[in-house]
Length: 477
Ligand SMILES: [Zn+2]
Image 1 (tube, rainbow, N blue to C red):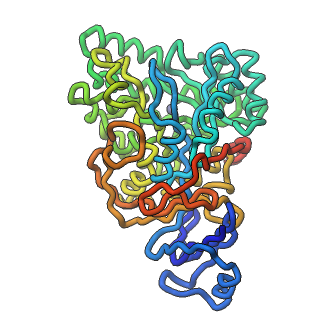
Image 2: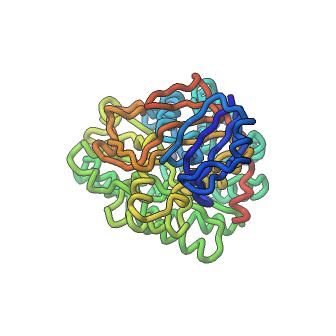
């Protein structure tokens, strides 16, 4: 299919330009600049367009034409705390598409005492034929041992060059410092990247137990027990381990100014340290966790912080100490799943729904809020994750030869976020009633229009597995 997207303003991380975009098959084949926003094409460009012979034309007058966004942190169908994250690869990726996200990178989990390959194969099966946008995987290492260390190399070769380890969740996901260092050393040999969930889990469990035994059982105490200093300590620790191993490290879901201080200090001394934050830490706070058991809707780890952390995180994004906003999308119904934790906040499944709302939230709070430029917004939600995770320039930009993952974005349309209208398979929204400015009009994945006029119009199982490149970009930047 040959598609012409005309009269829009192309926005990438590099700049803004009045331009028409030509798509042939799955790729972008031309970006034709116009002299100005209201100007027509030159005669030469007009002749080229006629020769192209578009079969479909999308009018983007007054709209932005942006690269499809990349959510580098999702958990579809994740088993957690005796239940499963509710979105499947089908429902979750469809919701992502509605929100302008055309690539997700999910987490395959190594089952304890089993191989990495077994975990990867399991997640491949969940996604294949179900996801409607392209997807890649990171590998969660639950069990670092001589066999799984060797196996890392073969996982990298399969296009899964990133491994997540945890300093939290003792007995489930936690790896001790020696195991983390071993995995880091191995990533130095195989060109992979280590991702860290950095919170001091054993220390958190002490405070959580103290609070529970003192009769403080509401979800609010989940937030209170997971001190920011425990996140800062673990963040510094894993950064120091990465420095010792001489490899880059990527901190997932950074939530607090305390942890950000550690990342900034590391980058200032020249470490290859990268970090993401999530919409919940920019827009929600510990205050949302009050109101009795309602607070369970906001239970995630790391937890929501006091409001005054938010502006520091925005500053981290402005100054590039934080490079990415990803969601950590991991939805559980309030009724039937979150309520496993009635009477004990430690049993509330951890995770929030967000995959559909990230792009608009960051546009609204960032660009409309006057904190960042449209170019920086694109960088945070699309280009930087493409570069860090080995997908650039196939994804993350509008350029000749790139996949035609394109969103026609209306920066002026108001949208009210609500569980009544969202497409995520979960019975509540953390942002219920919030009005954001900016919304996706048309969403294209590899040259196929998948969302238009508020409807999903793409084929079933359109998404493909993305073999990602080794983490060379983070080693050079
Ligand atoms: Zn996560």
